[in-house]
Image (cartoon, rainbow, N blue to C red; front, side, top):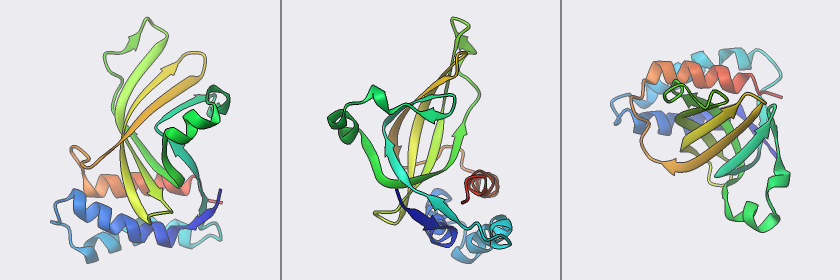
Length: 166
């Protein structure tokens, strides 16, 4: 576990946002939008995030990672990022409601800042959530964020990121 600053993440987000818009958005435009969206973080002393390992498959119980499902070898083989921060989760409405009334299945994306490579990773995610509080995530790296909206993305990622500041 480590700590990464918001400023470093913002720099990586500039490249990510430009790529997702097909470089239609200028670097200056993206920087200004990010500065505005993260302005609240600048007014506090809480301008860092704690990093952790992110695997391609995760199980959570009431929001807490359940690591006992993995042995060390399986966990190491499934690492997407050894030192990363999930900046935002963008799930669509559940697919066809729930399965058997107890499990809801959703798909979408997670945006991760990888500290090792100093870059933003886009992960395609399939999530299942049961009524007993267990959530599973299956993640795989992808390139394109379908129906990417620059303004909506920046506002959402800033809000989700700021909620995790330390």
